[in-house]
Length: 219
Image (cartoon, rainbow, N blue to C red; front, top):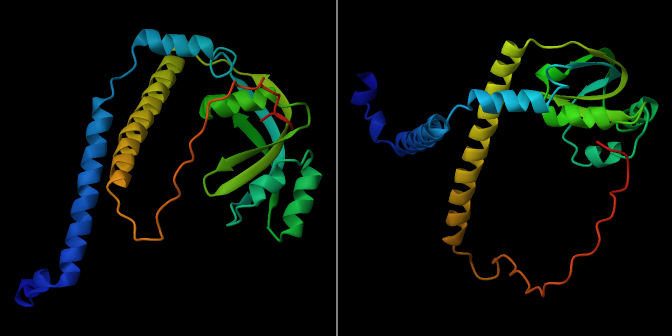
């Protein structure tokens, strides 16, 4: 009531904040609608995923890992600098050179609790090779020192697979819809003279060259 007496709701600041909240609510409601529109995977689909990914379920892998962990720095060049390194000593030297604090660590990566795409990369690593794994606001650079098998019961595997498949489909749906909205919006943008984006040059199609293997280590 005091705010109403002061006519706070009539100020430009209040109007801008109200508009911002309304826009956020519209976007969130739209996202919720997209999520609810994605059907839950069928039992057959979940079972097929379980069967196709034994390293997550029937032959679930637990990777013993040694490595270094550090807070993700605001350094866009670090990822490229880490890529050619082959040992943890080289990683430690690079972090020390760049004055990035790190801690030596040892632990386990459970395939059942890890993105299947990352599990696939870990399985393809050469013995002793290092890998980079984001962990929230931190980064783990490690090497695998051992692997053990710890099977998951099929009923639990099916629940996990169902949740994973639905989450993946939801993300794909949201990305697809929001991507189309952004592209449509860009078509209506008018640029000031001299600030127009460069036009794409016309390209004459050429026969595709034979594929060459990518250089560097896997993963």
